[in-house]
Amino acid sequence: MKPKLLPPVEYLQQMFYLDVNSPSGLRWRKAPSAWTKANSIAGIQRTKDHYWRVRWKYQGKTVDYMAHRIVYALQHGCDPADMFVDHIHNDKDNNKPLRLATKLQNSQNRNGRKNTTSIYKGVCLIKATGRWRATIRVDKHYKHIGVYATQEEAALAYNEVALLHFGEFARLNQINLPQN
Image (cartoon, rainbow, N blue to C red; front, side, top):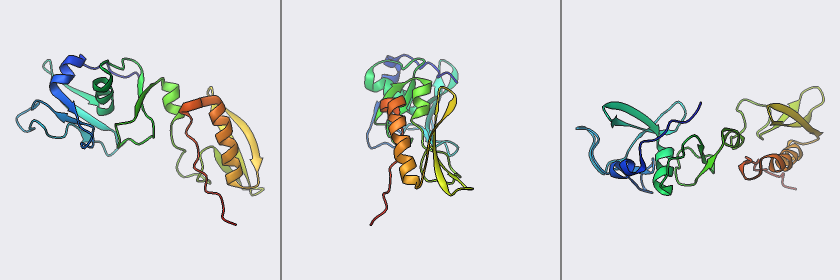
């Protein structure tokens, strides 16, 4: 889905200010309504996806924006437009380390799926042999990396290929090497 354009940055500067102590990264400069006070935390965290969202009346309509897009616009003085704003550390609760990304780059910076046989992204157990397969998705196709004796070896192989294909947007596995 294409991101929504924000109101002008000058308007956002009148409505909000950045605050590192606010969980959303934003506080209201002006009270947006009778039940919300100035200097209070702007936004609410959705339980469905954990992103902070901010809602208020703008030009007679209720508008709803992702807080990290507003934070980025206030930090850099421009609307991210049709680009995606990526949480560098993939922490939706932290709107501080942000960067612009394409939709593809943003999707490459995701954690692995839940309910899999391995704790590592791109690694799964081959039940018939008890060995570990490493795969990666590039250009809408899954590519086989290899089969390994341990899931740590497969995770290391995934990391190498992910760095090669995705560069700084690669979400690398944090590997727990077994203690000898």
